[in-house]
Image 1: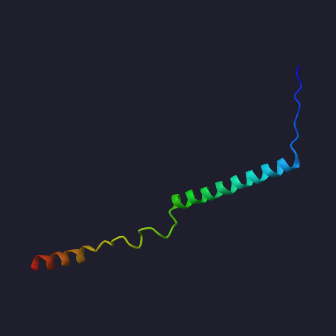
Image 2: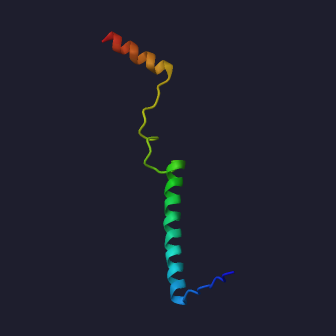
Image 3: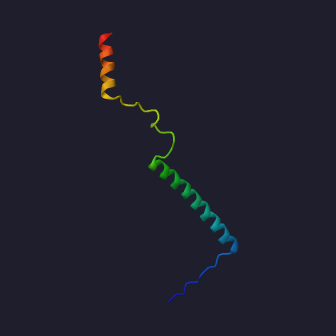
Length: 70
């Protein structure tokens, strides 16, 4: 049977790995927040305030009669 020899990483290597992992976690969190905001559509740049409003039936019929009279 062959015995596996475990290699211990130096403290410098471990610190470098830690920094890399933390950077990847931060990027993943930013992407997650971006995806969540796109999915939930909670941005203020939507068309809610610019979409045309629907007129009531009475308003629409009065406009139609004005158009037919002119």
